[in-house]
Length: 475
Ligand SMILES: [Zn+2]
Image (cartoon, rainbow, N blue to C red; front, side, top):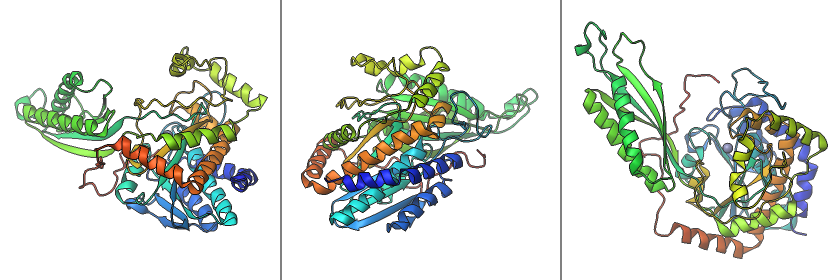
């Protein structure tokens, strides 16, 4: 049966895939510095005969691996960046592996390796069955910080791709068509003039005043943006000490909205507020762009195919030991955390509260509204039909970007979800390779969703390569 060779390959090579994932988990390299993690994946693909293009889109840890020829061209998206200060041993209570170190608190070690496994398995099946088409594994760096895919899209890495598939570790086995928020990450650095704050205040021009006035301006703006928009900031530099009028102060904003053009408009209004604050305080503002991504455009035919294959492959089956681990981890959650994470499902009449690990598959939800997070998968979804799913790799009720996720991403609970994900990706890519009608339907749905809107990169043209916001800091 179609897919048997790919599935068999994944089972036979599961141990190697788990080892690669654990190695990337231990390395825990943060965005734009995932050199070893990218090399591990690229080497495995190269050994199998894929052509590797390393360092695409001006990012040394970005690569494209290609095998096969002709159409259709199916892309599998992978990631491998970690998150600062989330290091954790694979135990159910707080115990960092490296105190203050980075960790895979978003499970991207699992994410990339499942897609690599799917690409390798597909190649086996295509080769032995003489299946026509091209597979591309996209090694996408810095999802968490610089939104690497946005730069890969801009560099043309996704051009000519007929369909893109990806997944993410989660506590649930599901295909959801929910969208995400478009996002801009930008810092506003104000330059003023120092002076003795008591002796000669009239000589000073406070950059901190500008930061504060800008924030007040933005707080008034909040009433006049779409209700699902999110604007959040931190003050990254507030001056040195109170008796010196600060000549340098900086804030870092994330600006999110359901649609990319809305995020752009709010961003432009906030830039004007920053200029206004500079004018009020007689300071200069420097706008420092750090990244941005577009909202996800879901694709119904591809989502249906993923859901069909998720049901076929089935959810991960966990051992009694793993269930006991999950139960203990859940016992450390703050009160209400688990219930809060299940609200959306409870509203749909699905009660998972008695469980700590998900061992079934949720129905396909076709709701396309935006969730309050952002992902650079969004930009890929503006270029070609794109769909994504999740498998259970985490304990139900785990907070996103938490040590709880780091823990399960480096042990058998995460491994099981990753292997199932590799199988679902491989089978769905195979469907797209064997069924031209699926690709046609996916493209029609994509065109319909786009309508008359055209894609505009959230990255201004003058930014030639991504900026590392943590430059100079070690993690
Ligand atoms: Zn993630």
